[in-house]
Amino acid sequence: MKAKSFIDQVEVLVRSGRGGDGAMSFRREALVEFGGPDGGDGGRGGDVILRASEHVSSLLSLYYDPKCIAQDGFPGQGRKMFGKRGKDLVIQVPCGTEVYDCETGLLVADITEHGKEVIVAKGGAGGFGNVHFKSSVNQAPVEHTPGGAAEERRLRLELKSIADAGLLGFPNAGKSSLLAALSAATPKIASYPFTTLRPIVGTVVYDDFAKVRIADVPGIIEGAAKGVGLGLAFLKHLERSRVLVYVIDMAGTDNREPWNDYAILKKEIEEYSQELFLRPSIVLANKMDCHESKENLQRFIEETGVKPITISCQEREGLEEVKEVLRSTVNPVAKFHHTHAEVPDISQMPDTTGEEVPAEAIEKFATFLKLEKPKKKSHPSRGNIH
Ligand SMILES: Nc1nc2c(ncn2[C@@H]2O[C@H](COP(=O)(O)OP(=O)(O)OP(=O)(O)O)[C@@H](O)[C@H]2O)c(=O)[nH]1
Ligand SMILES: [Mg+2]
Image (cartoon, rainbow, N blue to C red):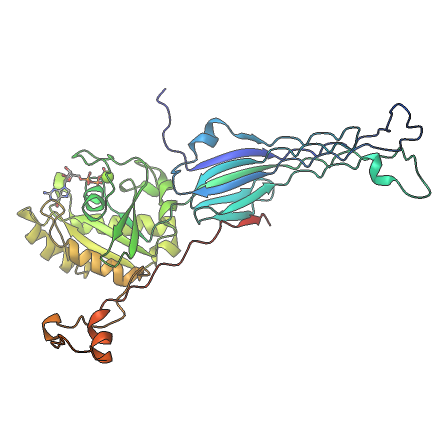
């Protein structure tokens, strides 16, 4: 059997550590007649924590090891020795992981930001040792309490990739070629269908460091909503996308008709989700370098009433327009931006040799490019499950 390399849904059992018991003990020492109680408290049990990490791309490790059990707290001991805390179990999950409670079916957390942590099972509190119960009227207490119980629950984790735009198209339409042309991602590209078997996210970086993330998912064929081909399960990776990008093979490879491809794609998406169907979309006519494409494009516009953006991933044509349209639709935040509308012509700078430079000249020429520093990243916050 071939080993799995990508998992986007998994059911796990999480159990926190139980609290350590409080101790019951009395001080016994030579020459100390009434030593008094000295049983220490137990330590807290460890939590089970899910932490989002951009360095993890799949839930694969949890698929092979679905039991997540944190360490129990240690019991207290005599001589007022407190028990050690149980170690937390921190599990790295990809950004975009949704956490559902299997019993109630409710969404309990959506972990999207890198570094964000969610406690999914809280460790039991440590029990009190008998030293805790000492008072003026009870100087030799024997009471001590057991540690708090562990928390156990079954969770379903579902990964929905975080991307601003999602590529949709028939196998071989050139989705992966487009992703490779626009970003630094290196998806597998080949002339046979279903080259892409798992979602891949690439990032388009603009000159001002604004970023648009694009998800490439396996191709869709007629009947996909009923499970034909690879089905539509991977479309969940497009659910967070703000714009859908239909990639149409305008060359009509394998005797396909591009206008039919578009109609089938729309039909399959509508069957999968009405909400996704109504999402803003861009239509791209790829492979415009092939000679059949021009004729097909005309017919495509007549049949569908849609005028697509024409591109060729192979010749790297039309990609700048795609980038600009993506940018205006997604509207990403720029990391840096010029505070001056235009950069002054440095040759216009007055010759001030031997003289004091006028204040306006300094303002205009000395710092003509002011850059805004990016904000410091805040410390990862640890949120509780609700
Ligand atoms: N002539 C031409 N061929 C292209 C162009 N873009 C992609 N191709 C070719 O089309 C074939 C399929 O490209 P892919 O990028 O793997 O297509 P895909 O849509 O990702 O396919 P799946 O992963 O199978 O769904 C490859 O042989 C590419 O070289 C293009 O603009 N012009
Ligand atoms: Mg592909």
